[in-house]
Length: 346
Image (tube, rainbow, N blue to C red):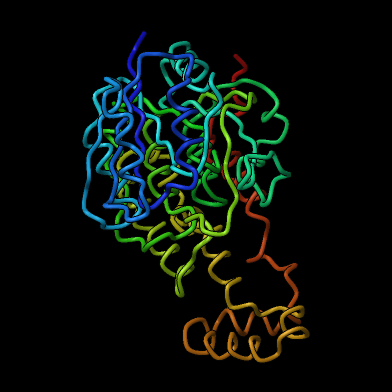
């Protein structure tokens, strides 16, 4: 039974730590180490962990308070297991998570990440309906079947739509793939929504994904969760960092992709669309908040004048060529670039 390194970065997460710790220490896969990196919490989180200091599976450390993903990286530096699980401090795992996902990776040596489904829960641990769209919904009926899919299919979903596994709380990684992918970016900004997508892109460029429709974890929805926070200028930064990450993976990107003279623009289509939508140049905004609409026009005059002209020419309709559904773009690229598809059932 191979060891799993569970990374638990914490900054003032005491409200949910009891449920989080219980869900880790009651895993049916018993060979694990829990690496806690606390960024000098001042809400009693560090003191809470002291009751587990005598547990041989638990390793405690305090690390500089340098941001969300710096804490994740501090945990990764201390990993000794064959597999890595990142335990976000406000979510939980079902007892079978490690056993199920380790088993999938053992069966599928070509896969570097095993992913399951998850429940949304509220602050009282009650299961609730999904509160947002799930990028993994792109896979349609394949969400109901256990399968292995090409990492390049996930790469396209990551670049165009968002992180295919939606929440890292339901994913398990091979340590060698984590090592090759490197650390998470720490220059993204505090609490930027879904900033782990850049790291997910690198993982997908290194190995395939094995998936189970079984629910193995929960994702907690609450007002203070980091993934709800976005700072001004995030959309432009997201677009720039997406391109930087693609460049970082360029040496691994299939040659047939790069033979397309527009390959970079095609890979950036989804995030550029997301960026442009931030100007809110549409009829709904014009009717409901004219001042915001005019501010968007003012910003577009300076930064995206060609886009502004296209929007006005279209009568502010979203039914235009440069506003296609990103799901359609992924399907086109899978076809045009001969990405292995469909997935293989297991």
